[in-house]
Amino acid sequence: MILETHRLLMRDFVEADWQAVFAYQSDPLYLRYSYWTHRTQKDVSEFIQMFIGEQKEQPRTKFQLVIVLKEENQLIGNCGIRINDSELREANIGYELNPQFWRQGYATEAARAILKFGFEELGMHRIWSWCVAENVASVRVLEKICMRREGHLLEKELIKGRWYDNFLYAILDQEWKAK
Image (cartoon, rainbow, N blue to C red; front, side):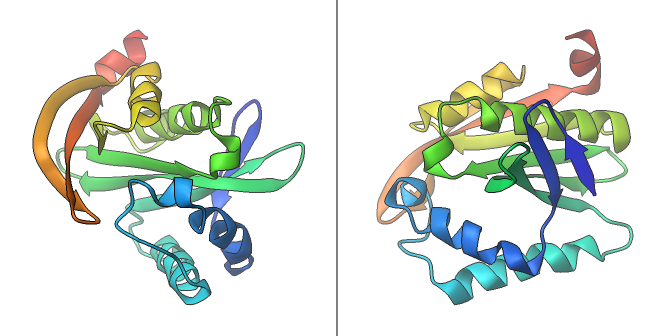
């Protein structure tokens, strides 16, 4: 499974990816809106094994792909789409990026590619996502890829003892085609 953009290559996880994922998932900036307070090598290895296992499912309904900078061949994060309901043709997307590569448009580029895959290859009708309302960078990504805010969920997440609001975003296939 490979998706390609102007600057990025997105591919299935392999076991050797654990070191690069461990490096960024250990960063306090990455952990800010995460349930995790810290990450161990075992945690990251199990995280990657989960995605490798999902690659073998038939029919495949979860596509979590690493994000690699093409020119440098450097893993900088991951992005995925998960089919929630194949009959209703509904899926959700998510992404995470090494904080060293924030504010360079990579998350937007990867999220746009995964949306395109969802609509054009998987035939989805509706794709949604959510983010912590205070995570302004993630809000920007979702809005840049033309997702529409559908909801504001008050105190939806309890992260490290603090309640956070969530924003819910979505886009329909006809909206995607019209953009």
